[in-house]
Length: 283
Image (cartoon, rainbow, N blue to C red; front, side):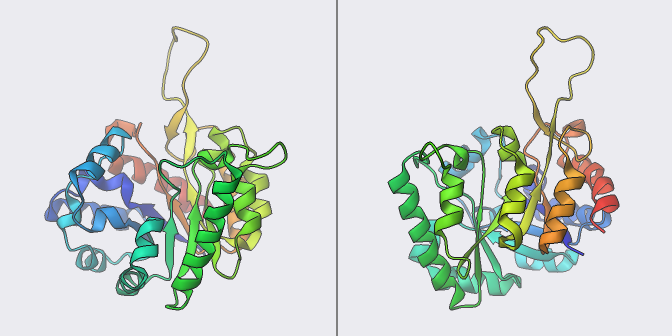
């Protein structure tokens, strides 16, 4: 059975201090999750710029990077399913990234897309594929496997026939680069997420799950509502089919990542509610 896990980005507002982080990780364990996915910029002290950018994106990380995450995660009895890092860090300091993965007991390092990058530029995306191959090969020398995590930018077209994601899938070497698939973002972009999961097959090593819908009740001012992140099973996505495909592909973990719009405005209450859904389907 895949590990049920939580992405650390959900926890920035509830892991600012040591005891708060301890209580939060204990709540995750009690809810039935067995793992956590960490972010490099949340397990090390981060700059004011990074904290500002994540806060503007609706995902504040706070100052939890000053805490001892190795000790906290171990105390909570959670497995680290992967660590998210940026490509530049891997290129500059591969030994540091490998050592960090080893210390957390994970074999996966994940790149979550590029900033200030034109995903409609075929030449740029081709070079990105080459850079990923080189980075993945270097990490593999230390026993670490590189995964690429999608958002919605990869579904821009680089040609009439192909999106950036399709180019990355075709031009990366499965020996060195595979994928952590997030079904929320292609759905948001109008793409058939289940078809993509089938296309990825066993190259999908980890699966990010979220639901999408609206929490608005009663009359609305206009006939058009803005969809947002939702607790699992409360939105409109075909999550049982996605989970079935993820399990068929042999993913190592199903990882909850909701961005905001949490029930009761609480990430803890939100992940507890989503845990009820995961306990029914990730078995």
